[in-house]
Amino acid sequence: MAKKMQFPHPSELPDDTPVAWRSTENIVQLANEANGWTYKNLCATIQDWVESYARSVGWSEVHFPLRYPSRTLRAGAVFVK
Image 1 (tube, rainbow, N blue to C red):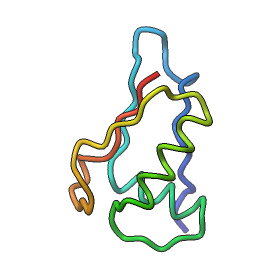
Image 2: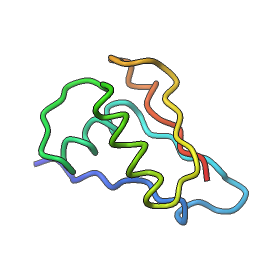
Image 3: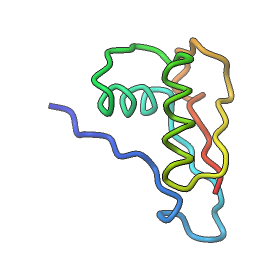
Image 4: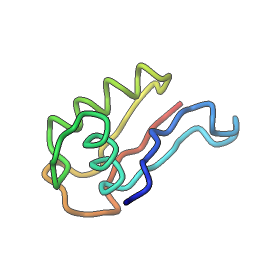
């Protein structure tokens, strides 16, 4: 059984590191585990959920470097304090 992913939290970062990055694979896994979904790729539904949840835990911005659907593991999301 795979280890459950943890959503990044701004308090985990030192003040001199204002951004966190997660791969597309991590973002899809986080969203699926939190919502009972079975998506295989980053999509608008996942992006909407990530943006909403990120703001609720204290991130000021979330950026997705590539448009969905993205199968590029490196693309992911960038969270800004």
